[in-house]
Length: 201
Image (cartoon, rainbow, N blue to C red; front, side):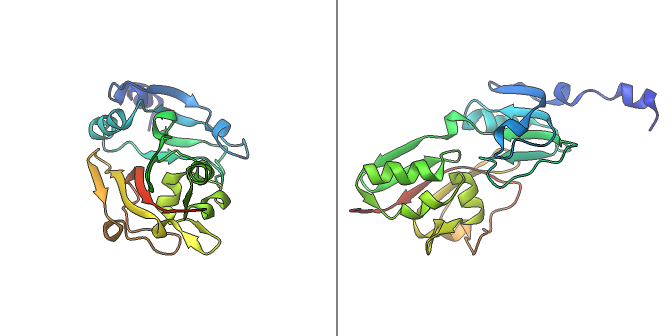
């Protein structure tokens, strides 16, 4: 491709839909990973909430690749960076709500924080999460586990967005958890789940 052709190609940012969250060109995603190394995201997107993320997915060009970044606890970023849009879910996706023994958690809630919150509420069954250095979203994606228990032991339903922004609520059968994996399409994005424990700790 000639330099003239390259110069006529619109920048990626100009091709993306309007959002309520924030776009950042050449976003430094290394600051979100535990090892603090690696190149930038072509575009870093921090959605305002689930609706903002769904609208982005529905309206973005189909040829634009999307990568979702969680806690970055087991992630190395290549020096050349990540092409397309890297989605960083923030505070609006970190909620933890407890109602009786039912626990609703956003995809960016840290597993450790869920274990701590349920312990403080007198709920048992989530102790294993204290040993998982990641988020609820990552735990759902890989059916994370520790100390002989895993996510499928406590999850009642999980919510995802499809690659085109459709909200899907999954039962455990739909989610299809297996050893360190699940049956959910790779281009779906987990945004939260409902889990259930038992009284006592």
